[in-house]
Length: 286
Image (spheres, rainbow, N blue to C red):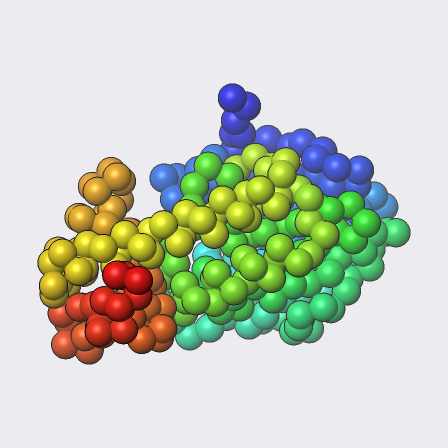
């Protein structure tokens, strides 16, 4: 199967190039995907970390002709290079301000805050911003109009599901955002990490199904235990996952539980002992 390496540059569509940042890790895979959109002047999507060689490569490949820097969200592997590129080129910073959960790149402050439906025109190409909270409350995807190519940041990525980490991450928002993308003319996914996904709608459906199956497993295991904290529950709900990943899985587990609590299906989070509510028992046995 094809793979990416740090520093790799590929054209993935007419006028669209993918440059892999030099921040490979267990969490980022080969590195954050930076996208250069345009021919004469460019829009840079997710410039990645403030790493000198990567920034220099972006400036070289765009010939310093950057009209705007767009970020999908402000996690620290996606946006820190934005201000550096803007200072070097005069580019406008576009996106949404970082939330205050302590996990964000606070250097990113947009010159223009994008809202759902905003359009960005560059070199005959048009990007439409789609507000897709879930992985992060300020998360945006960008649809390249007329092509079906959807830049998804960490909303969808190749080879892995994304971590949903409360309090800023929300499983309910994430599922609603996925379903919203099913209504868009997206056919290919350009993710924040990994290779292009060639069937966007099949992937969206797959991830929705995966999250629904995991939610059902949360309910099943919690009913068996009657009451459990996160440590006891994660080893049973994520028994199909490498135990070394359970520390990350606990974030998504909490996100599932909080969604189920909002739905009235589980309770007890405030006391540290989660349990299925009477509504949840009825739903499970229906």
